[in-house]
Length: 120
Length: 159
Image (cartoon, rainbow over all chains, first blue to last red; front, side):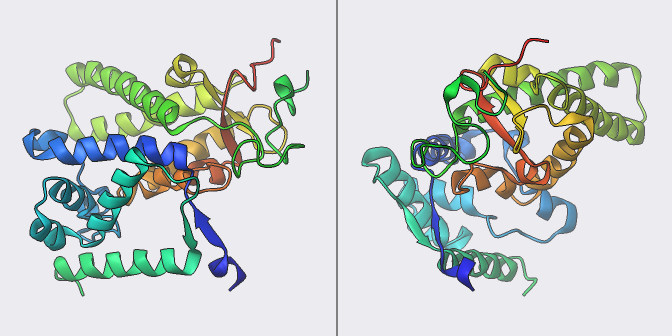
């Protein structure tokens, strides 16, 4: 229980790099040929989505202000897109949340994707 | 200058100056360097794979060759004395043992590759783990008890 109460803290400098790469990729992905789309290997191999499935589509849709499209793909992508923008525009010194919140969010995201693909 | 505290910059283990490198106990390779090094290595292995595909036409054999190629490349280069694949060499990073700061050896080099595949399976969650891990470790770093560090802080020891 102690570990779940401990904060999960982003390495802000590295997260900014990931935000830039991920955000740009999410923006241009619809323009890329299907062979350059980063499909989830877990879903491709087993048919089961992972907690991060739909995230690229959702972040890209949010950045294009298509909030309905973002909600359909993965609602948590909207929060990730907002976090990415904040990290790039006005990076805070510290971004942290309790581990149990992070785990709950990941499980909620996974549940959404399992439901979206008709598994749950 | 020892392997454990190279360049006086704090070794792979607990540093004498906590907080100097964020939550990590010493300098760690950045996301950018690791990403670019990974892309370079992936490109190199893919080019060799394509060359082999000109000769070998059996798809089952090609899949096995592709997996073995990646395994051999990572095991030999990252498990070797320098801990550097070609991508890591170009990006100025290397793999070191989390405890001693020395080479991880071929066995753990192989573990890095195998768990690296697992790291990529769930939308690369195992790679993204470094973004919030205290020691900036991915799943394959953890499985092989290693850190990826900048060469500027942990120079390769001359034999």
